[in-house]
Image (tube, rainbow, N blue to C red; front, side, top):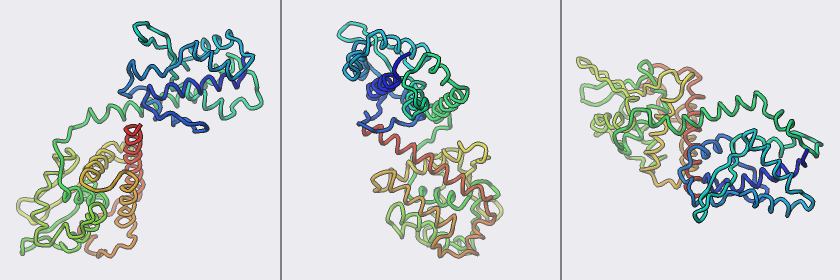
Length: 362
């Protein structure tokens, strides 16, 4: 048996000294540790794990000195037992670090160790002052193992999935960024939901005024340009739709019937209710290029802009565009679940961007 508060302090110390090694902002007093998913991502994916950053990790003697400073009557044998027990169950990872030519053993907190610390620190063993090896083993429940495996799967995909997809072949212009968002926000996500454009005898598009107004709503929101699209030039602009194919990948489809005046444009996102990976990819590329071309300082402002456009196009908040003409441009409405899927996809992508910004700042 060993004191519970010693084990909690032990895990906190190892966590604090593991953070620099995993490129996680070092916590200040009272700050909660990062979420498990992010910790796993940094544990496996941080590219700054090297001899220099490993200097922050603690040795056994350093742990002993830190703990005996805080707990007057703590014996060295108790600290050694805690190290042994936590290493045995996989909460600690022992690594050999080169220090001036000598290989010194240091300790790294594993994702499992983070979960154990959080549960102990949040009062899992309420009113219990001593903890045994069996108590630690009992905490390794089936639910915890499932949670760890699921999180590792999510992190693996976030680290490696993009490298397995079709690689985009280049950037695209502000106009195509707006057109891409226009299709997405109006639910052009499959052939049956496509944007339906009709060329008129005047070699322009039917309802082109409404089309231009909608595109300029997006241009004004992202790029502060309410006149980016103009009636005389809209057809020439949309002829460059192949930029979306190069910039986003094969998700974008544009068909022009050879003997007719109809044109169709849409994102082929597939069964987004069961697998939103293609939808996420489209959102990701649009977000990347929007941030590239705009003057917005970061993700937070972009999120506000996107939420406003979702309200405008999906929920018709303060939307003056002709309902009849929009229903002709987009003849078939989406299922209700697309609103949820779209907003969930946007949230996932922007959260990932925000986490990346925090990592770069640290």
